[in-house]
Length: 92
Length: 450
Image (cartoon, rainbow over the protein chains, first blue to last red):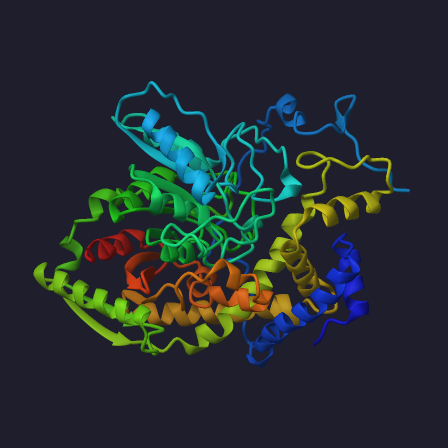
């Protein structure tokens, strides 16, 4: 598996990133060197193995969903506030 | 405290270990222990950027759980914790040499040779711990080697606890299934103190495993449960004959003598971990970057962090611009790789496959720990490299710095890097690994190597 121009463009679109031309050229070589390392795992037989999400067994204990953050303090971290709400860019 | 304040300024001016300093009461004259904190760990009202420009001006409104625990721990003690500041690291933890500094700060320098790397990603934690003359504990974090590597390069002790032992609440995540908050210190006693102080069950982190806090300090010298058993040690990664490996062998001899003196039997043999060594690096990077690429998707310059672009741009253009201008090249590369591994067409071949190989790797370790109490080997394959040399290596070659350390990290196993000697006047480290949730045993053995 190799990362070519088309695939790199698609990944960047998904990741909300835009590369400069020099980044694009530089990354393609570097990413494919890393891909050679990634491809090593293809040779391992994992047919009867279930994937794991954490390295230890977890018994998830749930808690009450109680808001305890200070809303005023949190909003001090942004200038994008209007009428007490966060504002973002328009969809179109 | 004036001397402490002066020392912090002097060290930082020369070695660049702190990105933020915390005001200290200069009139305090009681007993104290200074504490530094990796920038990725939140302290209320102290800027937290995880060494990234995209988090400029982010001031957390809460302390992380480890900071809350630390404050509680010292409440009834006759010693005061003095929080001195946030330490520099590779942006979001992305690096093994701490040269990937994403903010307008200088690369930290190795305390033994200022032309060499501190190791990463928790380079500032290790460097400051090595350099300060005062009693000091640094709260660090490891995803794939970010405690062991810098501890080894800077000649200090670095403990990475079992995944799930220490709450991650208030840690800016790199990879949720791999991140572990740990401790660096100048000796094993302060590693034990540090672990006691950050420990404490936390419902706010659903991956934090319910457990009773242990008295790690008291257990350091408690031989009772080891007296009637034979300690079995497996040696790993010692096949090459170089000074780093020779230093490990010397430490093993020292350990055997000390165990003999305590009338504790020990058996040592070489263990083959070639499967673990071969596949841990790709599995670690596929999974850590998959998780990182989702974690970093929340960083978009709206609710906190950098906000230097007007919101009248189109929705996607706004996020693309703010992310492309404020993430470093290394971060972009890692987001790209992680996004790729999660894409619908490639997910089965990479991310899901890596989760299966991870299971096999953990099973191999658990099989070994059925027969052995500890695994011991070098922490890193090399001494700290020159910063100028690192600038010329490829991102893949930089990843190789994690060759040894990523294995126990991937399996969530507790491990400690302890100073083992010198090679070309630079510190070398020895890594001891034990089974999940056996930190008391790990620290006990480490205490036998003095």
